[in-house]
Length: 117
Image (tube, rainbow, N blue to C red):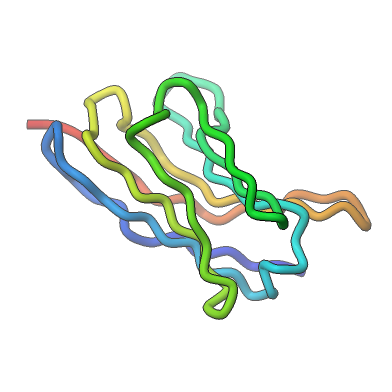
């Protein structure tokens, strides 16, 4: 079983930056892919960034050019660098780990990001 713990959320002004961390209890090198999702109040959870075992990355259009997902396999940690934050980025951010055998998704508890003046 994979345990995920997010950290780094908080309150930031528009235009500011935050870096989220996701520490995994398993070797992330062995996972199919990991990603970051977010869920704003009254909205469905959405995928914003993912990184595959091979290192390929994908981003939602709303965060392209502003957010960067990266990983440190030695630390079993995935990061989300968030720059030029906007009020519409306000949400609970969740770390996700996907495995194929057996097919399953693991989720962290989430960390709140609030962008406001």
